[in-house]
Image 1 (cartoon, rainbow, N blue to C red):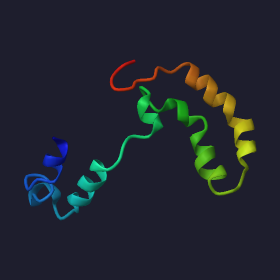
Image 2: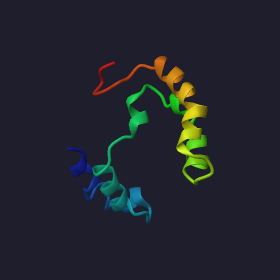
Image 3: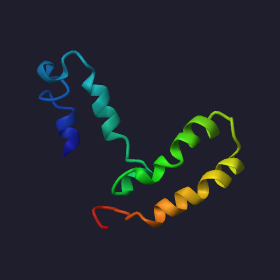
Amino acid sequence: MATDTLFSEAYAENDEITQGKNFYAVAMMASNVSRGDWGYFENGSWVTDWSDYFNNNLRYGRNTISEFIAEKADDAKNALNNMYCVIKGIR
C-alpha cells in the first residue's frame, strides 16, 4: 500500500531522501487528497482558456459569476467537446 511506503522510515524518515525537508507533511497530504476535476482528462488544456480569468478575476471579486459565464462558458464547452474523459483508466 502506498501509505505504508509514504510513512515508512525508508521514505519519510530517511535523511538521505528528505534532506531536512518535512516529508511527513507530504505523506499526510498525499494520503488525504484526491485529484481535481482536471485530472480526469488526458491533459489540462481544456481549463487554460478560462482558469486564469477564474483564478484572478472572479475569485477576487473583480468580475461576477454572470460575467465569467458570459465570457468563458463557450470556451469551456468547446474545449470539453474535444476532450476524452478518463476515469479509472477507462477512456
